[in-house]
Image: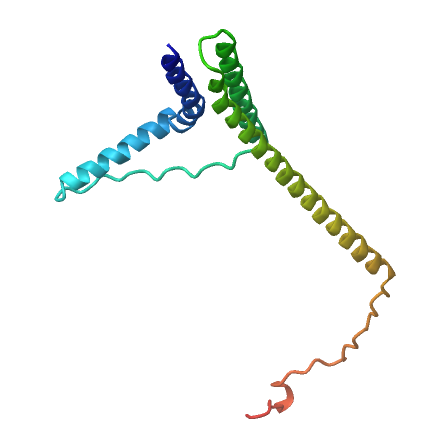
Length: 177
């Protein structure tokens, strides 16, 4: 009985990890596109004489937003916590030994450690961006002050002669003719 629970716990851990990954990767369009790419490569190997049909280029990946990253972290934390609570309930009911809770505990602890590092990186990135904005504002203020305190440019009036020079007037020739 305990080996069946162990296998069930292993399947549950893998399901928590792999199912979201599969759902994210295998949407209808990407799954079909991947199948078409695979089939076209197979037909290309089998039929060297035929011209392969054009395969559309995959669309470039969109940059993930901060909200998407936070939602993904929240889902993963919730799933690992539910897995740990399920393992604890199985142990409390006496269906499995105590060490069944070790893998979910290790996974949750590792995930929380990674979250701690990610939060530190996010904080450092925000501080660097704020520092860059502050430097840009200070440079803009300094440029404004310099423009205000700078002496105005001296305007020089050019005298226009009464007669405009024309090289062909009155038998005048340019140098070299």
